[in-house]
Length: 231
Picture (cartoon, rainbow, N blue to C red):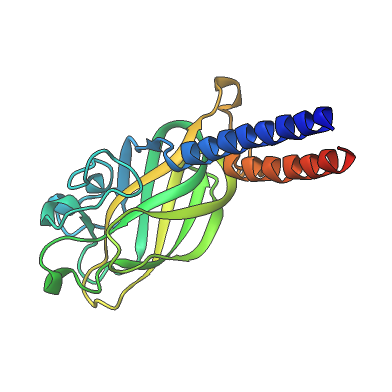
């Protein structure tokens, strides 16, 4: 009996350790570094103070920069379309090919509330490319919350390899004059140089680390239950 009790205790201890490791892995994904594009161009802008560069320079975001960072209401730190150009595109160059799984977008938050209301992006598509020529749509008609000024994470539906990302803006929240955004980042890691070619995108989807961690917990739990029964 003592040997069985000791075995059960050992199994329980190992299970607890595995649970802790899995939770740390999930936390690591949540705190992953965000990729800042090296350049951005939009199909229109109101004037230079509202250019697409305002989407990548970090102006107005609380530090340290995470998904939970809040963008302030300074008028000079957001992108704004030209008058009556309510739809259009914003293209981002990441400077290298990255494996990406998430786009993080901060909503338009420039000026007093009466001025910025209804100008934020409501729906958009997301396209990716390795060569800035061949584009693949990976997100269709995603919706941004209007008055949420923290980062809004948009899943790319799996892991894709891309250097260029395009936001195709389909609608705003009803303003007849302008459409705007606050800031944009992406979650991913640099692809090894041997993969920096013009292969099609997206890549074959792979499980995200958090999903792998949860799968491991489930399999380990099954193994523990079987071992306890044998004890």
